[in-house]
Amino acid sequence: MNIALWILQVLLSAMFLMAGTAKAAQPIDVLAERMTWVTDVAPGLVRFIGLAEVLGAVGLILPAMMRTLPWLTPLASGGLAVVMLLAAGFHGSRDENDMVGLPVVVALLAATVGYGRWKLAPIAPRRT
Image 1 (cartoon, rainbow, N blue to C red):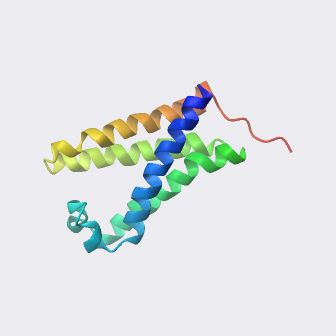
Image 2 (cartoon, rainbow, N blue to C red):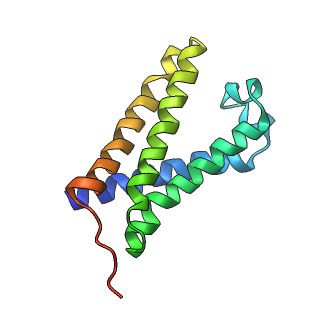
């Protein structure tokens, strides 16, 4: 179980790091070429979502890997699951039904990591 969770954590972290960095750093008009929704919301919201995704990506790996405050890993995965469920709801409200499935699947994967790291295979804190 531990290896499966690590694989899932690394894959989710890479995905959120790439997506979040783009939302946080790229100009809005460049983002709009791939993500049409970014022109329909405030630029600050796009940047906030990007920052949340980058911080969540770091939170999936760093606390567990360093074994320092490892309870942050399930917290980060839970936060990312919420972000993805909100994304699914946002796309659904815009009748972009083809854009709803992927965020729901990613939310379920993030929730799996959260549950796995909280109950099934928690990371033990480093002993000092």
